Length: 138
Image (cartoon, rainbow, N blue to C red; front, side):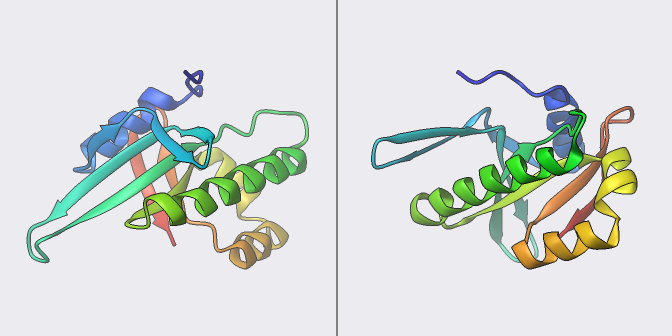
């Protein structure tokens, strides 16, 4: 089993507060002999639409000395998970979870915004102290 990220419980609690039901902890991705573990799987019922939205969350801390190296590693992992998810669970949408601080200090830089836009990364911003989701970005 994979080791939990620093903010695993904070993101899990934030999702629950936001009305999500945690379905997988971790979310296992299996494809042609490959087994990967994303941090969480969740779903939410939208009564007005009478359908479920299903998501997979990968939590990233960005606490290494080189944020660019961390981003390179994160984008690689995100794209691998996305590729497998599209083949095995196409009804799920993949999100990267980052803290408000990482978003403000790094993700908001114009060059990083361009990279994220080019890669079409979905992410959510959370406050680890209050355990709430601040914003969803598609």
